[in-house]
Amino acid sequence: MAELDKAALKVQNDTLLPDNITQSISPTDHRSVNSDVIDSCLNNTELGAQTILGAVDFAGGATVEGNQIAQMENVVWINSLADFPAPNGSDEIELGTGVNTAYYIGSVAIDISPNVLINTLGDSVLIKGIHPVESQLTSDSVSPLIDTDSGSIGVENIILSNPNGNIFGFAGNGISSGFVLDRVIINGCKYCAQDITGAVASSFNRLVVLSTSVGGFTFTGATNSQLKLFDNAVGLESGFLNWTGDFIDLQTATFDLITIAENRIFPGVGDNFLTGAALGANLNAGGSAQMNGNIFKGAGTSVTTITGQDDGWLFSGNSFNDGIRNTRSVSDAYLSSSETVTIGAISTFVAVAGANWLSTLGKHFTVDTGGLITYTGISDIDIFIIATATVEKVGGGGDMICTRIAYNGVDQVRTNACTDNTSPTSVTSHGLFTLSKDDTLQLYVANTQSTSNIIVDQANITVSGNMT
Image 1 (cartoon, rainbow, N blue to C red):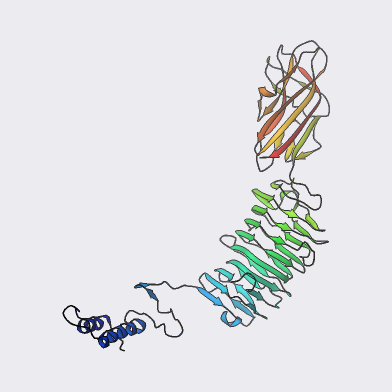
Image 2 (cartoon, rainbow, N blue to C red; image 1 turned 120 degrees about the vertical axis):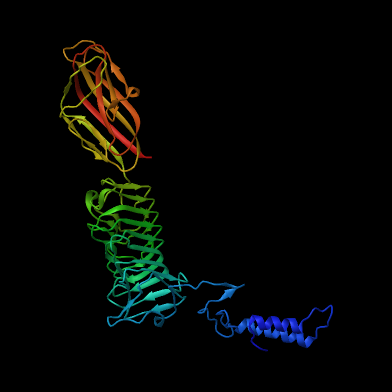
């Protein structure tokens, strides 16, 4: 056999394999040509092709049907500690290489003790296990197992443990840094991550958190933008393993958007799932937070300090284990003393205002002393309102007096109710409305037969709403 280039192979073919109509082809010549063609295909270096005898090496660019296969750039396969970059003098393995890099962890448990992994060059780094159970990383360091400073980190499909320290550290740049976890099992650490800051998006999906010795995830600062927790399993219903303390502690950190949805949470005795600042203080101006469809079971608590009635927060469809309630949008309002309403024109409705209105219950509503009820929730709601008041004409007499509910300052004819009695009489107006944030409701009255003023007494209003 011989290694020939394309031109030499063509000459050999024309010489040894002529047209078999005019000249016979011997088996020896046929075998010789075939052997040289095969040998040349396997070993020819003319176009940069590589031998595939023995170990396969694609470094020079393999080809299929003459088309070169693109190499996988910036991908590192990890089957042992030795496959990582060499640690520095502080037992730190720098994953940032100046370019965005993916590290694929084989189906093997890798102990990198006493080292930890760091990403400090502002890169976007992915760590992904090949097998959801067999791919494992562990260390015995007191430092975070995976620490990101100014860059982004994504971790997927892997089991992580660091009994003497935290699993993650994250300090993003607040502009483009992301912290993304998906299908990660955490089993044994102090915190999952402590004092997360600067994450444009923190997205934790399909985590299984079996045990921590101090807490879960804590946040700090004003440079976090979005937080999402979706479809996570936190703790075990048996109570055999669990996190300790608060699993999500927002502390005084602020966000534009928080979504906590469809998680299964089993807090142990003395443990709590969510805490933070009261009265919506974890939300930036215009921000919102939703906690939807979560299931809580166990002897611990679901939420402390934060409530579904706080400004900007919406709890809906959750099954709580400890008496916490989903968001209710309700309000009352009542007159503490009678109010005389000045009538300027017949059949013109005027607000029952003044300064004597009070409220004892306002969930996502405010009531001012002039009787204006304002919806402050973040989602549209359907509400039922009923307003009852005792009305009479100043000076007595039998004018017909009517009440209506006003929606955003416009009295609604469909809520009209009237009385024509000559003595103080109770009148009730009611109606259904869809409210958006900052919409208002108020009680109005009118004299349909004269411009005599109206005395309104014993007025009370009830508003009850459901999320649309």
